[in-house]
Image (cartoon, rainbow, N blue to C red):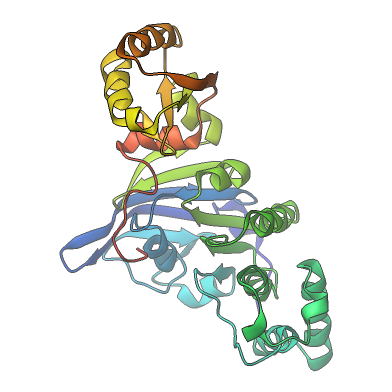
Length: 329
């Protein structure tokens, strides 16, 4: 069963990592990563598939030993005090840890009993969590009949049975529909309001923007930027240009003109939609004149605050979804 933090543990950072390294074969999947996560906050680790997010989580939760560097959870060394750390953390991984042949209630009840709850308390906790996650009507339903969103909510409920001080969520909303994602976001916000520290990995930039107090941007195993969402946005400029081309066939030509005229890369966010971070909004007029002379027409354009998509593009040189490796590093 998870336990309450001591006064000394409360005075420590929830997570502190220095120079973490993990090597698989000839690839440094985690490459000198530093992290500092304050207690009671949501800290986002943002990056595409294969960036090293899951491997970093596995190291911090004592599931993998690092090949270099050090890390502490509430002041406890991940190598020397793994048993203590496991009493202070919960983990919801990318894949559900549920028994599909049992009902939702039976899954939570068994987890609670394994964590030391009495028969009566385990039942009470299971029903309370089912209610919290909007699953009370599915309490007696076999998990194999659940939708993806229901499984994800039940999996998160299982990780909260003993209310861990620190919760690791590894891409908790991947594959969920927008409504269920929004439900999960509300659950995460409520947990933090109740004092839980959350480390969240995601490849959804809007999710990091919505939930995280601070964000580490990871690319190819390295932290390439860190700060609050607003700090990261300001680092790439004060404005963002959004263009909707009339003809999809003009996209490649338009991207080249953007680079030559504004000196920065645009991101093709749709087949005919382009987003461009800008430090000087006056350049918009120059670009529109270039487009007019080249016969490139627009159905709409707007100048807005930059998004995290543009932050990632500017920092790494590619959009967040491009880095596909075939695995879930």
